Length: 305
Image (cartoon, rainbow, N blue to C red; front, top):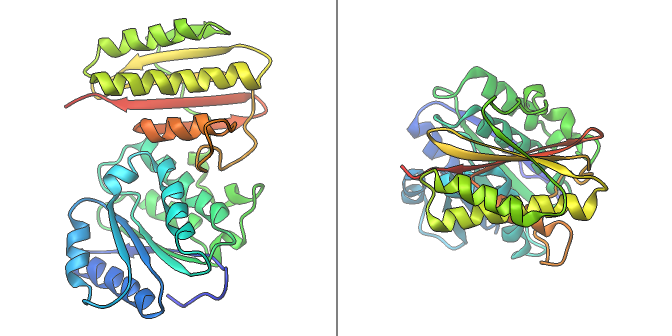
């Protein structure tokens, strides 16, 4: 990858076939950055980090590894982690390796990963950072690779803005969410958040969620419902359903969120964006769709295996 100048974002996809090609290319990318004095954050699934680490030379420079299956379980967590790393190195170009899609991810997770990739072009448009995103060509559907080509144009999405970042998003990842199943419980709410919390806790007790995870889910739903009360003039609707793998809570209201990076920027506890940021931190997956017709937030929590 060519070295960008100044504060220009470089955001490239790397489609690989096989472990040797993967390891060699990523190690070379990291080494090139270290040679230029650029620290690196590497977020890849599971044991891949150890294989890459073993390939690196023992030289000076900072390389931080993290497991993407934890960090990127909900892809909305990735941008704040990368932002935090960049902010620790002011005035310095940094590198990031982020493999946010791997075989076995659900269709909803893949769509949220694609939205994350498109939003990178907005979040880091004026940040001196070089980003490489690996995609396993032999293990992923062709549609995923086509989507990666859309979200990784160079220069990064032609300078994405709050109005244009969607231009590079695969269309299937920006459609309204599929309706909840027919058996979902429907609960309209207005100012009685205690009833909302009790209902979510009651559903959680019927699943295999642990106590701490139940508390997290109740907190997350309460935060979104509180946003309805604080930032819209109407009421909202909560829907809850279970699958063998997870419990899902969806809230819809008539408000519109105008900031595409809402929930992906760390805020203080008294700031308006803090609630959605907190929801992204505690839930396993968050799907958000917003527009003139209102806002839908769908929160997933996996049940214990």
